[in-house]
Length: 34
Image (tube, rainbow, N blue to C red; front, side, top):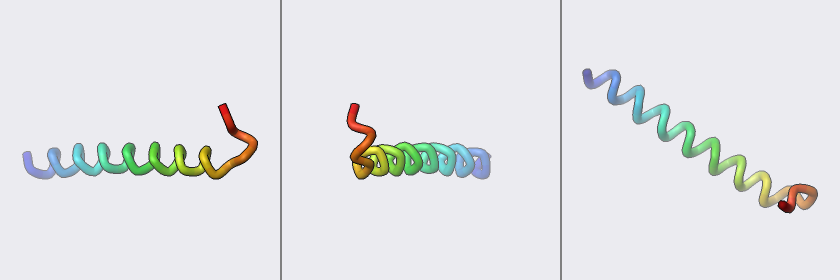
């Protein structure tokens, strides 16, 4: 049970980190201003 909770938390953290990275990259990219 604990392992699945850890996996779920890792997945959530990973998706949060990747979306934050994408947002930061889009903000740094001058071409992408929507």
